[in-house]
Amino acid sequence: MTFLIFGISLMKTGTRSKPIHTTKRCYVNLSQLPYTLPESTKFEIVDMDGDDKKDIVTLFGQGNEGIFILYQKENLDFAVEQVIQLSPEFGSSWFELLDYENDGDLDIVLTNGDNADYSIFLKPYHGIRLYVNDGTNTFNETWFYPLYGASRVLAEDFDLDGDIDFAVTALFNDSQNAPEEGFIYLENLNSMQFEFQAYTLKGDFTNGWLTMEKGDYDADGDQDIMLGTFKVQGVRKKSSYFGAAKIDPTKLLFLENKSNQGKRVE
Image (cartoon, rainbow, N blue to C red):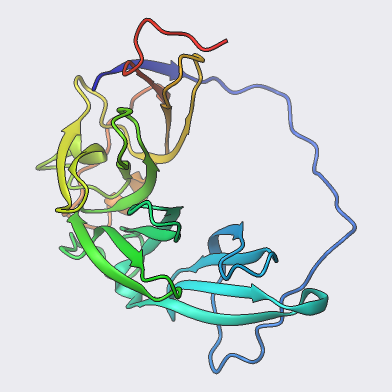
């Protein structure tokens, strides 16, 4: 599979966006929990128990870190269950819902890689983890790919061969010894055996990739990828494990997927 790379430099402008105001709110009462929770870093709205009500799947980082499901009951009341629990040292930063086994149940792929707190060193337990749903919303870790500072993950059949591949960014990667591992594409070779082939970017594109999104930007039937940068020089200076990121004007990177090369969907 081939991605074409386009770098985009941004300049400051004098325009400012206007705030969006909403008046209708829904509050979820978490007071029944025997512990407090920090802020949620990501959530998905989906029916997880088959009752035709939209539930909330959310990631809480630090403290009692992990994935929680808020099951919607009547009158917008929610029952809360923690389905994945990790140590706050894991630095959970992102998750995606996917049906990895194509069995109708939603599984979870999770990145661990936040490294901007009190223990700044290269952590061997950072990476991406796949949790497979047994059909009752019990999630078992079935695969782990180590990657220092893993920040975002996208789950998609990028090469159009019928299985799920992963694209991963790593903001706190080992910039001294493996700077190319700021972005990794994992091609799925054997789903049941969890065999993946790793690819990194060609060229000098190692610029602190944090955000990432997929979409068929050129309307050719395959999913392209857009990467965005974030400056972490201040954090990197606190530890000798991270080299100072060089100044690079590229702020966005467009990876054009060529799996469906020559075809265009109108």
